[in-house]
Length: 102
Length: 498
Image (cartoon, rainbow over all chains, first blue to last red; front, top):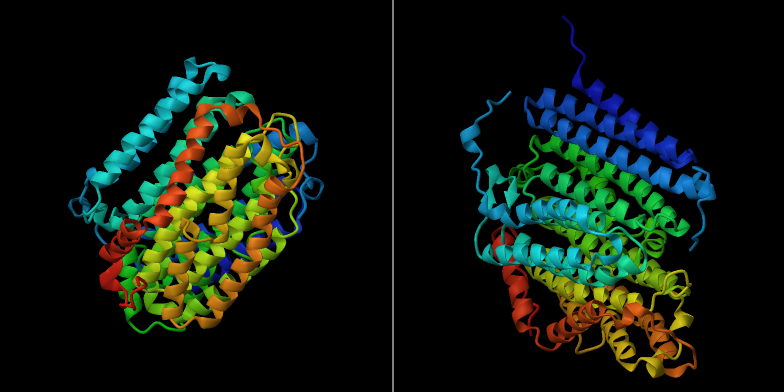
């Protein structure tokens, strides 16, 4: 059976990470930014799994479990913060959350 | 795949005792809070203080032990214990500032103290981590708790905005740190710091995987320590957050982040330091300069202290660029003095705060010396120490770091740092001028007369003066802590002690 070389997974991970980073920088809806951050974390997970496989070490796969947990905690906290802000401002647009400048 | 050997994981509870105490305390405080009303929550603060003191005693007991446990995942060496002690002192001072702040601003205490303890736990875990994943978990436990704390004034639009900006930028930087860890893991084949160092001793210079990994980790830590150009979130998060939380962000988060940053970069990525030290040089120069120049035009004291915190991160980065064991000891001493000084300055800001009134402007400090000479004197002391006026802690901290940098041959960086120190005098002394030489209606809030806030101010002032005028035990302790943990791994450098 033919197998996909690990460098392809690494490249896919890098591409997804770049898409996520671009999403955070370009999109102005905070919830979309949160989704883009999740995409970045999952791109890293893919990289870890690919490296773990090619290095023959279990560490990379253990890390991924921790990262999934952290990402879940982060998403829950982030959504709570977004809801708290939305209750007061009725907007989730990053450009309108601009009370403080300089 | 390597076989999983349980016996190889040497489980030792003693080195992580302070961590366990802080973690369990957080949950205990949360449970105890069920029966406490928000307007009489002082008891909960006292309980938190007692639990922090207990962890402090256990951490003191760990001094002088090697503390390597869990197959190297935990490294409770003297470096880690030094950071744990300073972090616990900072947490205790922040609790003292919060005891009366919470009821005055109508905040629920149980969640507040629990989150404070959880983030303290994260900071201590970052200092104690012996592999990249433990440091990452500590980083996240610390950050996620502080995101929530920053938005704790739920009805305040500014606090909402501070939490949101801090969260988005923080989570963004976390992803960079994690990707950096992944690439370093790919380049070296391990996540344990010791073996990473060993792997780097083989010629690896120019390995693209390693270089991009180091660069991405630098971005992740750069965000957390608020280094330019990753500092955009700092002033907003500091201004909007409740002031005790701002104090905790400026001191505690910085301590935790620098603990991990120093352990990873200065020590275990030391063999490839030519690859990253030039980048750190540039970041340090920009961090100092931008922090100080933008601080000049601030009218809000919390925002001014935020830019001042950015500038101080720059001075610490000068020490990291210098590398070597003497610079490491100098940074530990600097952070100890910085903790007392900066917490004191924020305690003074809290003393002037009133609910529902804009009281954070520097113009609000006019005439404070007449109205409340003690408070004005304390604030002046902290500001002079931040400027770096002898014989206070801030002066000697800078002196030791700059000496170490000079010994390492970083003449131009030290020149930039000294020029920046002079620039910083302008905006620190502007506040002193407002307090002592301007007529005004400075009003001390009810918080300024509460014993807890006054205790915090007094402890911070004593620390700032004592560490400055009698530095021997602290600087030798800091040098010893760094050397006993990492001395064998680092090149010996000329002593910074006269």
